Each structure stands twice: as C-alpha cells, then as structure tokens.
Image (cartoon, rainbow, N blue to C red):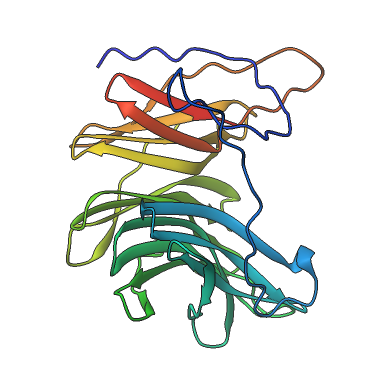
Length: 272
C-alpha cells in the first residue's frame, strides 16, 4: 500500500453555499430545517452528533437528549418531508447517548455510542450499539474489552461495506493502567466482535471517525496523547497505524482528526 497524506491548512467559516453541482448550475443554499426537541429543557441540552443517508427520503441523525443531568439516546429520521424523533432505548438504569450512525437503506440502520451509570454512582462507560429494523431501535450486544472501576469502552463512529460487514471505531480506557487504546468492533452479519488493534509506542490512542471502502480497505482516524493526528488502516487481515502529518506552528499545538471519507481507494480525505 502506497499511502501519502497531504497536509492542508484548515479554514474556519460559516458556510452558506454548497459546492456547485455542475459548472452551469446555481449554487445551492444551505437551509435550517425544523427538528424535534423531544425531552431537553434547553436547546443546549440536545445535540445531534452524526448523520447518514441512504436516499433523499431516508436519513438518520443521532445524538444526545439531556433531561436535567440524565442523558438518553436521540434518533431522528428524515422522510423527505420532515424530521421526526424516533424512540431509541438506553440500557436499563443507565444514561446513554449515540455518537455515530450509518443508514443502509429503509429498515436497516446502525447507531453506536456509549452508556454510563447515573451521575454520582459508578460512571464506568460501556459500548452501545443499536439497530433499526424498520419498526424500532433495539440494543444489540457489543463487546466491552475492559470493565471495572472507572474503566470505559466507547464507540464514536460506524461505517458499512454491506449489511453483513460493518465496522465501529472508538477507544478503551483502562483505569488501573491509566491508558487509552483504540477499539475496533466488526459485525459479520451474526454478532459484533472486538478486533485486535495496533498501537504507537509511548502514546495513547483515540478513534473518532471511520470509513469503509471495501472488505480489505477501511480507514479510521483520530489522535494520540502526543497531540498529533492518527490514522489506522484495515487491509483485510489486520489494522496498522499509518503515518499522518500534523501542524507544528503556534504554541502547544493540538492536532486531531475527527472525520474521514473516501471517494476511492486512492482518494481518501480526513478533517479535524
């Protein structure tokens, strides 16, 4: 694999115009659409973290609905006309939220996130994976490599090659060892399983985004505790860390990648 990451300087701006669909077309204006706020007392209590679409009439957005100090999963669906809130369960007695979603088509979507005990008790974090079957969201068992104490397992993003080949990415916090390592979980059509992950010596690792191109070409991005960008690649057999550039200008620069997408196997973009 011959991989070359190109460093670009980020520009922060309020965007009102989308890219031109064609040289002759007019610019498309972004619009704010009404979305339900099912339970939060304040707008700041409700957050949508990820979105995925399979068609103009089938889009899912997921996030957090915070009611007081308690957080519950938030799922909203676009049917081509309007956004509607759809109930998403939380593990019994625990607060939970969703960080990533992938929409495979009507009647098939997956969302990933995490759950924790209520405030003031054991806050150990556990992975959360939910599936939409066309009628309801249900919790699907997912691995938790490290449990106990204040250890935690979380999933931040999900991507699919097909209905029987889905990847989720996140991180594991090992409380006794006080370290964070990558967490990759794979669905083979039957069950979710944790997959061995690589490491960079002398550093901790966090995965925030993932994109799947084919069964032997999956990318995940994030950062490490050295405050530099991180990318990992699945080649069909194993995950390996691939060198990525980081910006070193300024005082105490912090570099992280939060999203990744692919146009083709040799045209992959990451941002952060």
